[in-house]
Length: 569
Image (cartoon, rainbow, N blue to C red; front, side, top):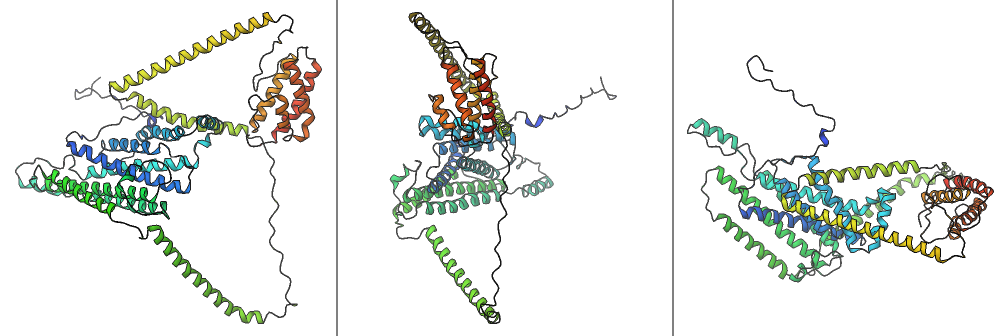
């Protein structure tokens, strides 16, 4: 089908579906960084990642002062890896655009890793206990410590992302230098267009970001090391990345190395900006200017670091002490002003007290304000709401993790990563098959042993054939199965109310736990427990009257357990 001019008619554009925004991102490369030198491609990410890591370490040390039990094990390596990923991701872009699908794909694995890495330094049973708590209550995943760690990771991502884009904006942009003709009008047009591109503001933003962060880090370091000796030594640098409450030496060593690295990064950005201006002005640049700048900058910063190590700081006031002095002075001034205001009020109201009369004429004080009676709302069964909330939270978390994992799996780079993942998958498959074989062998061996024992013991009573009750299942028609199923329903309802039957706990022991919880239904609880013991372990047939008694006892216990909610043991 063709149009009137002979050209083939183009097909209509494809309509955007409702789920188009949730499609997997493309990670389009906007900038080619292959033309940069090896020094720039290695020095720039090293400085950015080191600054971000030192700042993260300072924040973690500051947080451990207020919360010694804060789980920060493994947070620093995850933050460093996230800074590297953010730098590599931002180096592909030409503008600081927020593509939320790409951000989710890259950020979710680190958010999951930082929640699991603290368990590597904890006892083995801690992970299993907390996993069970997460399954029953998904909101327990997002405790205050994990939310603070996520905040730190978001700061790491934003700092590395915007710092990389600021340094890239100080370079010559694509199409900024155009080979124009010899006409004066072309040269004038190019000169006017070049003036519209600002290469100084990104450097200023970078300097404000890291130097302002250094001031905040200095305050955190001073608060971290209150009352400790303030001196620096080269050997403390090795202990810099160990978690725990740091000394003043470690805190100030972290601050000193941060400032050295930040100043080196800012000076590098200034050099990149100057080199861009020289290139735009058609100034000839020597090939050794970069090497000379690097040697001079490293020499000055090394001299500053040596002076910081050598010069003593004992006896100097830290930022926290200066802050306490200022706060004390302001408190004294405020106290004086309040006292003066009180004296003025007393002098002004003194004549009024003389005119008020004698003490007998003064009426009794009015009755004080009484709080309204507390309204007791009837408790209701919120199990359906809890189940819906649990399903919703786990659904959102599962969708985010699967979305990120599927995109990373489809875009895995190189044959090495694919072969590594294939090897891991085959190893996991072999391990699962081995576990299945061992379980089947143990089951067959147990069956053979039970048959042999049954044939060996001829005089004993026959084994009572009964199925294990399914928690929450419906009772059967046989009295024995009915009683066992009703007791299983009792266990399930008690577990939903926070009373969990422990392993190897007998029915009599569990009855002693339930007696204080339902004091008005002690008799039905005793009847149901006795009926369960007879049905589960007795060899004689169970009468129908006992099953009817168990049903009536369960009805009373069911209504009693609705109004009960106690914390888990």
